[in-house]
Amino acid sequence: MSARVIFMGSPDFAVPSLEALHAHEQVVMVITQPDRPAGRGRLPQTCAVRQSAQRLGLPTLQPESLRKAPVQQTLAALEPDLIVVAAFGQILPQAVLDIPTKGCLNVHASLLPRWRGAAPIQAAIAAGDTRTGVTIMRMDSGLDTGPIITQREIPLRPQTTAEELSLQLSYLGARALMDVLPSYLSGMVAPLPQDESQSTYAPRLKKTDGLLDFNLPADVLARKVFAYQPWPGTYFFFDGHQVKVNEAHTHDTFESEPGSRYVVNNKPAIGTGQGLLVLDQLQMEGRKNLPGEEFLRGQTRWLE
Image 1 (tube, rainbow, N blue to C red):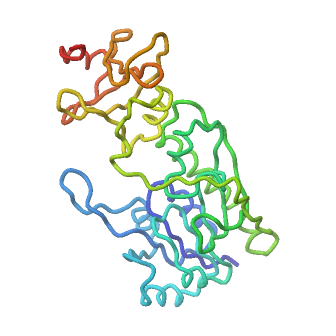
Image 2 (image 1 turned 90 degrees about the vertical axis):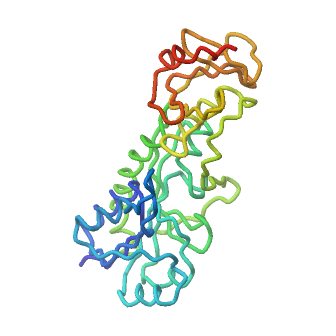
Image 3 (image 1 turned 180 degrees about the vertical axis):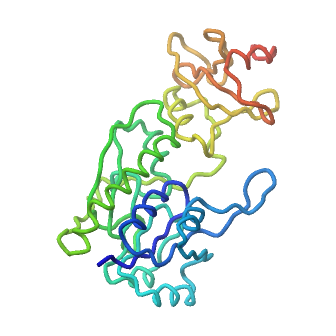
């Protein structure tokens, strides 16, 4: 007999888990974040999970908060066996955690306890981690502190963007969830507590986090460029305009002054605290993305 499941998630990362659950269990409700203004027109945009739920014919709810009693009563009335959460965007209060008879599971995009928090994918890339993965954990009242049910690990290759890694981990997470779910529901899995001494934290990113600080080493900045694709993006200011950096690499052949501008192999480069950051793909504010060589041809003031 299939379990009655409430699914909570919002972005693309959560969609494979929802689709896998729908194929094998009874998803009685999908909870997502409310539609938010997005794009230049600031029009309300429906998140990926709600779009998927609509395609699958599943009922959806978009509460501003799970702390309101009417919302909690609605969830309790569904009599779920399980709540599954994947990149939902809200912290579940204890009253919600207590609703399902089998508890609440979270599909988290890191090897917990490393990179608890809202931006584990970006944090792993920015830190230069050589491995990452997903964790299926039983949720408690803390932030990604609950006991671990299972983990899946993959190598993290250099120059992987957050967008690419998120796609990889979304499917890995769905497979890990469905592999362990039958054993978990039958009580055959004993969750293991996390090692608190190994925990690290990945806070929610802001647009301002993308501003490149050229006092940092070039390799740190290059990792940040890939970690923050597609959001919040990385940028600096040149000639009074914001310039977005979409691809970059390091060059370490001579000493440079942080923030000074250079040309390396016909591409723009900027001095850092250690080495040069060579800009392979750039986008001037309000213009299209350009290869570094083409950008340089249109910027005669680069070396002034």
